Image (tube, rainbow, N blue to C red; front, side):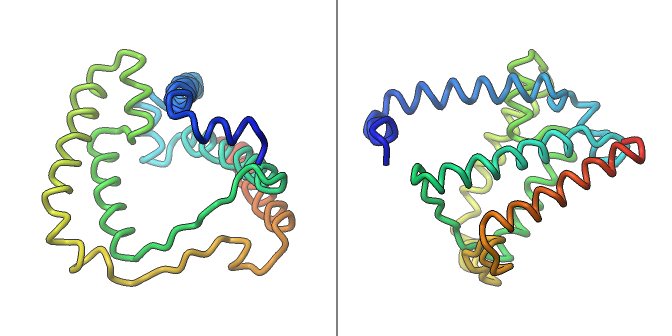
Length: 188
């Protein structure tokens, strides 16, 4: 691993500063992309405006290539995590309920707070804190009853398809770009 990254790995203060800097840039880009707007998010949930999906797919397209290049040059070693159907269902329900109720996800709520949206501050930040506290209280009860049900292996799309990483990326990128073009073609 390069000297820059090994130095960064040891310097916790620099990690915090870089995390804050990247967080601010991420929030700025969310704001510029229009996805911190309650109306845009609700329109996405109603399937009448696909701005959120376009921004997220664009980020995945760029990130997929960036991560593959970093891995290729030895700067990162991804560690896919195993999961369970139970934890995915419970997490999806909690996330979906909050998302549909408030019209923000955790990333967009932070961006909206930064832009001065009081509904995001009061409903979003307070909702995240209350929801986290409720989940923490319920965790010991649901951990062994629900969250461990239906184990899922730690497998990547590349491993699942049994293809070369770059061929997998080409296929995935073509599918995502094709979907974005289709959205534009049909007027979304």
